[in-house]
Length: 384
Image 1 (spheres, rainbow, N blue to C red):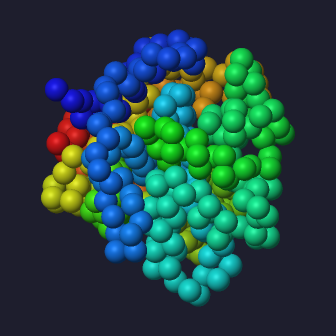
Image 2 (image 1 turned 180 degrees about the horizontal axis):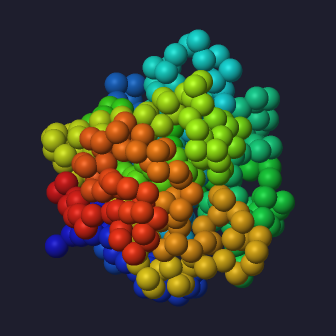
């Protein structure tokens, strides 16, 4: 019996958690453990163009989340396998192209994002060129946001400078693998049975409905969530200018009068809206959605020991890296945020926190008591 995509993802995560270092050395044996769907006849549109139907061999995985949820780490799990064509935040280029013209509105940003995702999932990487200035010449990109986070873009034939026996390192790829040949990269993408991407630039799963209902695509969505209090704490540390007033509150214990609270409430509203849509089990999401909490992933002890303890001081300080102690990191926000800020967060985010299984801290003492977790044991079954 053919394996479902949920089994593919769960087995992949389990395999990485148990034996990450072994996965890095695999050359031919797939840790996905499930055969790719059989190839079937393509769908032909009105213009006569042929696209594979949603039961074709290529399966597309979209990691849907928000910033500071651990998505870089999870995305790299998918990135480790040789059969996966992985792209890191391709919608960054849409945002950078449209934000200077923000008067054009959020609907334009969302529409452009869906169009680009559609093209990239079809391995049409030329679609990126519309969002780059100056425009690439002869499909050669002088730069691409975090291209070095994708193994396939740092290997032959896309990057001839890297040889088959070279160890992939992001810092080396940054120097060796530009310009990027989109023609070669597109061809390599078409040869892979799996295409995976992560994005923090689509707010809720409902925004993806047109793509999920498109018979030419076969998208599976993994929505990654995290305790919003932890997200806020991490953003204060990482985006110091953008979250300057929150940082003042954190440091002084006094809430600034001009604080922009939408920076936080939007996280909660988006989580609640997206998860509520999924839990209502609409037909267009059936067989296409799985919800994962960052805190649950951080509990995997073997995974932590194998991959998250930094091997150098530089790695440990890299806020965008994946080498850190996830066990300590998951609830470390409790030692950073003042209790009155936590109380505010809990009042604003009550619906989403209850929905996702995050407990309120009722006192400053309870907040700082790291022996008592504020994360409930809760199971979110995939929508089969």
